[in-house]
Amino acid sequence: MEKKNTLAGILAIILGIILIISPAVGVMAVGLISGVVLLGAGAWLFVTGLSERKYDKPFWIIFTGLGVISLLAGIIFLLNLSSIASFGIWVYIITGIILILAGAMALFVGASGNKYKKWAGIIGILIGIVYLIVGYYAVEPLILGLIIGVGFLIYGILNIR
Image 1 (spheres, rainbow, N blue to C red):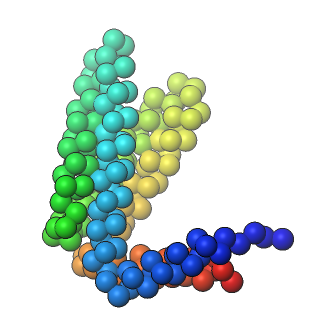
Image 2 (cartoon, one colour):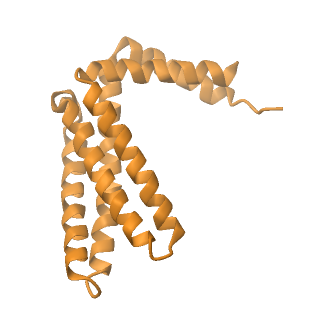
Image 3 (cartoon, one colour):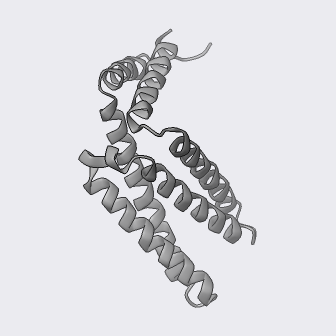
């Protein structure tokens, strides 16, 4: 028998209704998530770059530079949540590109035998592609907020059903 999470379902339905009524909240949530993702990816890239400093000069410079760019983009996204809709598709495109690059680098590092880095690279690339697709097709950011709301609503209904 499949276990249902009723509380999560109810919360998802409430959140879905709020997002459908006010899609701007969904856009701000995506901006918040993008900011946090970029901060995490940036910190990982920066630390990895510094740790590779002894072994491969071009590699550590690329990692460190991309880490700094990711950290700055994450901070900008988090500090400008109220105007995240004005960034429009750029939030998704920038996040997608950075995640794809970080994933490719993790995949490259993981090729030496570290299966966790290899899977982290694959997941990073896939999430980056999703961000690019969403950014490319969501010309109006408020439409994305509405889509997120409908997604939460469906998730909530399926969870309590």
